[in-house]
Amino acid sequence: MIQLRQKSSLFGALLLGVALFGIGCKDKEEAKPSGTGKTGETTDTASRGNTVTGDTIKIGEYGSLTGDNSTFGISTHRGIQLAIEETNAAGGINGKKLELISEDDNSKAEQAKTVVQKLVSNEKVIAVIGEVASSRSIMAAPVCQDAKVPMVSPSSTNPKVTAIGDYIFRVCFTDDFQAVVAAQFAWDQGYKNVAVFTDVKSDYSKAFGELFAKKFKTLGGKVAAEPTYQSGDVDFKAQLATIKGATPDAVLIPGYYTEVGTIARQAREVGLSVPLFGGDGWESDQLIPGAGIALEGCFFTNHFFSHDMTEPHILSFIAAFQKINPGKQPGALDALGYDAAKVIIEALKRAKSLDSVALRDAIAETKDYQGVAGKITLDANRNARKEAVLFKIVGKEFKIFKSYRPEQVGL
Ligand code: PHE
Image (cartoon, rainbow, N blue to C red):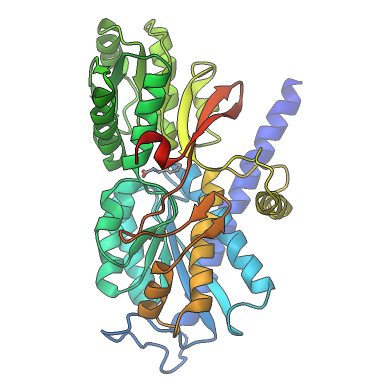
């Protein structure tokens, strides 16, 4: 039994290695053609942004394929790749194939900016997909805005991301909604007094905590304590002791899976046994391995996708995903990566010309697009108004407990 388990984890590690190696190789292969002497390939005029002049339509992707939150980048990449492959298998767009150029930012904000500069200026991509983490999207978005190249974030929820400019879009809801859902849920559960434990290094975490507290107080709730941590920390016991002393009914941790697992374990160790809850940052196949049983029965808000959903378009997405990733279940990040790429692909079909300015205008017109993580209509602020789900952690599974539409929380 033990031997079997070791074998399968070794196999898993090998698979991951092969997958990462594959990504690395592909980047190098794909990076070459742009500089290989197709004359007149560069048409980066001030007015049209980047223009397609070669045989392929280049789309850039930047994400955390390695580093602290690598499950975010790896899952998102799988979804993006699927959308690109499906489009190419169906003949591409106006006879041109799509070429995905993936850059790894190593889960670092500075690196995100550097690789996006490379995608936009050297590779001359016509659109950029990324990032997951709001702090990295906020860092890289100005590069796209200045170059007039549309950027579509699959899953960054901080309100500031799309406010950077008219070239910056997202296919997910914002934390103005997600944090309000978390507050309404907490109140409906009967929690009157909630502690908020925030990662001060993360734009996502800070805004989520603030937006939650504001709504929760409006509903009549009290914020029991507001200690902080920093991503990368490993010892949270001092803050957890403070929280325990404030005797809250529950604790909101608007952080990423990387720290949430450890925080949950240490909370139980210091005798803090109340429910913990969070947001989409908990979404990872590494959450439960990190937390053990410490999150049993806990809750988190997430994007409107579950592999248990049975609508036909979701079933065909899952089937296509599993053909490429045998034995795996897609998560919200796979779904959102796929949807972000599809919104660009659909816009390419409608764009008046194959340049990044015309593409921006076509993306802005996205209306009622049936994505796998919910219907997408981009509003005047380039955000999507969508439903959210609330997951309950049961064993190793995330089970849909409830779903919320914006109207249900007064938005
Ligand atoms: N919404 C998070 C952020 O903005 C990122 C995230 C999305 C993480 C979805 C996991 C799943 O930083």
